[in-house]
Length: 445
Image (cartoon, rainbow, N blue to C red; front, top):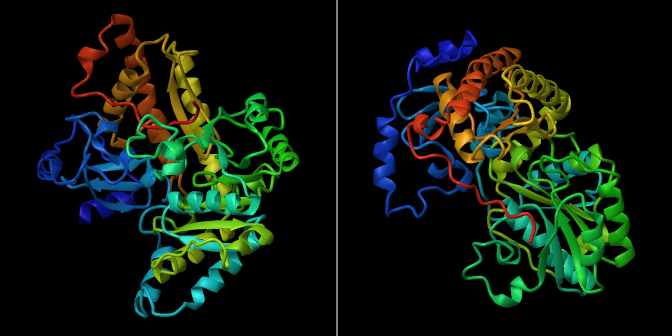
């Protein structure tokens, strides 16, 4: 532990001369087999998203932008909890707020003042937040938003774009729909992003809402979000932004501030509390007031005080430190650097780094070979440089200029090696374990 903390203070990440020893990770994995279905609580964190036999499976500790696995190996982390760690692991201002509240209790028999105080703060920074409700997961509040829109409009059909969680109304649009009633499946249609023609075709007079991620990795084109808002208003349908990824990351007020489009309802989680479990539904007062009596959306842990304390501390830190500017600057250095290195390696047109700089995705063209095999190779080689990577760079406030240089230095060695491997037709033979499997992410019919 002392060596790990020393590494943090000197801003070093250990370079592995070979692939790390992951014996304890594998032991835990064997113990979980048959006990925990699919091994994981979050698909993106599970064993199918990392090269078998090379990548660690279980993490023990995090500090800033670094993590240590159960075997003691150290990594620079670009997954950051799959989104929540916008400030970094064990961030002092947030953790101190949690400790302070912990001394007084976690969950109470009546309402807690933090429920009011956090809602007032959210209303200050989120453009559409005339009213605020809490829950625990992103799927909770997207489902609540859909139910609320159905109640407000008196309609039942839903148009969606992006990923919105595991509940029946959404997951019925996916291949993993077993157990979802057919009637629920028939009420929801998914559409592609940035395509107003498909929106127009889908907006019948029985559509209660359009719910979408306002941006995934592709920027809106030709005023897509503003035009979508206009179409929804003309049709009498509500517009819902699923801001799990964009909230408190693109801007303090999320995508609705960044793109200057205010939806009727918006859903937040992930970055809002730097790792604590909370989700938030915000929206127009005339819609949200249905939650007073007509629409039921209550949960025992909605007012859990540790997460509310973390929410307030996180939002204030994002505001006070102008965290979105830092995320964009650090992310742009990695994005631009990756593109330059790919050109130098002769991979231009075969790989790219796309998205808003705060959260970029490395893509591989099928013309170069199987994208999942290529991703697996790059992930495998990054592990030797002490970099934990699952295809994207999720930037936190704890990522530094040194981290940028270390990461780009790794790419300078890996991408020419990738080019040589592809030219030699030896990609599969140079993988040291089972490659990454397709991640489930249903976005269109």
